[in-house]
Length: 243
Image (cartoon, rainbow, N blue to C red; front, side, top):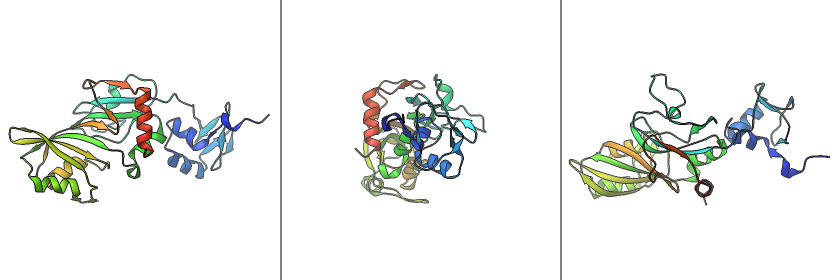
């Protein structure tokens, strides 16, 4: 008797949920002939039934338990799996069996909320600009930005890789010789907030990400991590789908 449709899963989704790649990356692997099901070359749109063996480049792929974590990243840690310069990586702070990877990146000198997961499909959606999932930062800048500088940040700044999208920017406090800004962007370019602020003449001295979509750090201590709660995961998926 054939497996019912409810007991099968599309191959690219299976690979994404196993942490192998995003769905798009999985489709590329399938098209390149790198993926087999029970020893037979897989085709685009192939389904995987319970008990079938999926291999990528000859290595079996196990259906991994999907894991979703929030980490309060400390300054000095890099968001790569390994670092050729020997700097500490965020994965060293985790105590999980599953191989999770960061969703996007925070540079070494930026602290705050970092999501990590082995759900390649969700990670792809969260990072794709078309979904516009907002990310909010607390930035301490040198100097006191006037209305003209704030307006430029809000309307979009010309960077070497193009103009940024409009951002939400407000002054929430002042420091000796500087100001504290709250900046929300819907992109994820390399060091984007730092580059935006420098372009308008107010370089960042401290930077912390305090929210990713609907999620906030709350009372999570620096260097600590925790699993996302069911309602947080549901809200995050809704945000990643444009809901």
